[in-house]
Amino acid sequence: MGNTEQESDQLLQEIIQLEVEIDKIMALNGNREDYIVKQYRKFILAKRNKIRKMNFGYKDLLPN
Image (cartoon, rainbow, N blue to C red):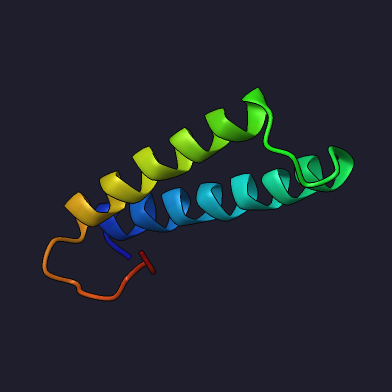
């Protein structure tokens, strides 16, 4: 596996972990978004953008 593939896989794993954490926080907060959830969403967006740039040309890698 190439370096780009490994980094892409790592970013995807981090995104999934952040989404799981968001689900946990939202469950504890009665489905309200707080500061932490908003920050996690910003991190996810940044990681998704980085993956898209790394995998330029690979369509449908991540859902919008």
